[in-house]
Image (cartoon, rainbow, N blue to C red; front, top):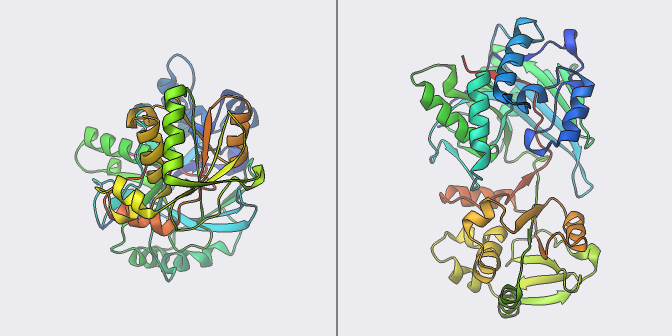
Length: 417
């Protein structure tokens, strides 16, 4: 079972350098140079100074800056351990308002396995070395891993919810309009009640696979027991009504005549095709055979592709579990990206003639601009399907899920010494 504990968090002294809205930031991997500069302009203590360091020796810069912030009392450490209740009020890409609730804790780093911690996606190799060097330099988790657990009766959140009635410790409205609110819960009875609700649970990593794998490497480098054996996580129940998954769409380029012919042939053989309006290119959610939106630079006419028979996917993915054979991203990857277009796992991992779009509008715009040759617009992956594939011991293709909203960086830090 996963080992879940309260933490003696490092965090900003808001009375000294607040408000938190000027200090927190989106995840490092979605921030460009212009946005980084805008965040620093809000406050010289914005977390990007250490989580996205720049310069000739960026990791040394992060280590020195983080150490100075602690020495100067900009960042302080709690004397007693606590869990931190977290609420995100947001409007999703589908236009619906929702509230997602969870809490921050530290979780013992273990090998992936049934009953403990499972991944759900293959990871890209590049970010791991960067995050490992940053962890070595700062000796802290600067951003949380987002993980899911099953709690049908909401027992863990019920233990913490009474403490969210008062004013939050910190609040941030981010650039997407999401309101993030955070409460410190240090009462031992509430912590014990939440831990009891989590006894025996399995955790499923929703976002942050690279950081979790980095934490495993770092823990083994240091060796022995200690704070470095734990990692900062935000835990959300699978049954939470505010938990939603949105799709990440696929794009390809560099298609020559043979690859166009192979793609056209595969589509004609395996899919029924109907033309749709631009605003209808995104298929609605569902659990039937693969249904995707498609558009390419040759005609710019959006289409709806529907797999003719689930047996086609079952045969192509015969070595995979039944859950995986019904996974839209897995079927698309096998039938069209790999078999028809000849993309390899390495091409997909390193984005060779391959890319992603967060929404249908962006996918269409990239085709209109000629930056890609073809776009595949997907349905969202149901939460239960994510769980079923993970339970089978298989990993989904990269970016099979887009959990919105993202967790912010800079709310809390987990010291590793």
